[in-house]
Image 1 (cartoon, rainbow, N blue to C red):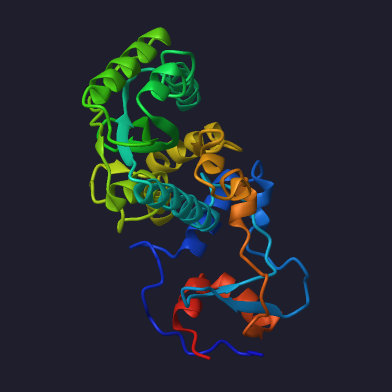
Image 2: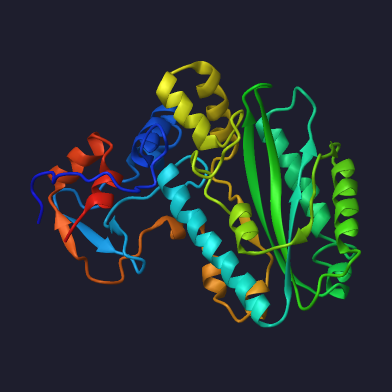
Length: 333
C-alpha cells in the first residue's frame, strides 16, 4: 500500500490544456455551491479512514474505487467523461450490430435559431418540445413513416455550445437512426422538413444545418462525445461547457462564470442522451445497459479484485494537489 506520493509521470492523462479533470471538478463545485451537494463530495472516499483501492480496466488503464460519485453529466467533468464514454460504447454496439445485419446508420444534426433574449432553461424546454414533435406521432421517425422506411430505432444527444463573441448559448441535437437495410434516398429531405415544421410548432426558427448522411464510426463518436476539452473541440470561439468552466477557473472572470452557472443550473438533473425504447431488444443487446441512469454509469466498475491500494492520506493529498489523474497515468505496478 502506498503511504507516500510516488514520483508522478506525465503521460496522456485526459487532462484539459488548463487543468486536470479533478481541478475542474473542484472549480465547478465552488461555482455551484451550495446547490449541487453531490458535486461537493464527488471523488471523496465512501469509507473515511480506510485504504482507497486501485483497479485496472480491461483496456489497461488504472482507476480508483470506493469513491462517491455525483453522476452529473453536465456539471462534473469526471462523471461526465465516464457517462459519455459508456453511452458512446452503447451507440457503437448498435451501429456494429446493425452493420452485421446488412443495415445502415444515418447521422443527423438538428439545430435551431433562438430569439436574442431567451434564457438557457427556456432554450432547452423549447428544443426538447420540438424533438418530441419530431419523433412522436404517426408521421414521425418513431411512427409509421419511420417504420415504412425501415427504421429500427434512434439515438439522440443534446449538446450546448457557448459563443464567446455573441455571449449566447446554442443548444442543438445530434442524432442517429438505425435502418434494417439501405437508407431510402428521400429520407434525408423528409427528416429536414419534419424538423423544420417541429421547430415552427414551438416558436423557433429553422437552424443552419441538418446534414443527414450515412455514418461511419468516426461520425458516431462525434455525436456522442464527452463534453470535454480542447482535444475534442477545436473551434476557438464556440466553447463546450467544460471549456467555459476551464476559462472561469483560470481567470475568475464573471463573463465566464455567469454563463457557466446559468447552464449548469438549467441542466441540473437532466440527461443529455437517450435511445428509443425497444432498440436494444430488437438488436438483442442489453436493455439494462441502454436504460442505465447517468448515476449508474458514473460509478467505476468494482466487480474484480483491486490490484493495489493507497492510504487515505496519500489520496487526500493527491486530490488537494489536483493530481489524481496524473498519478493514475503514471502508475506502475
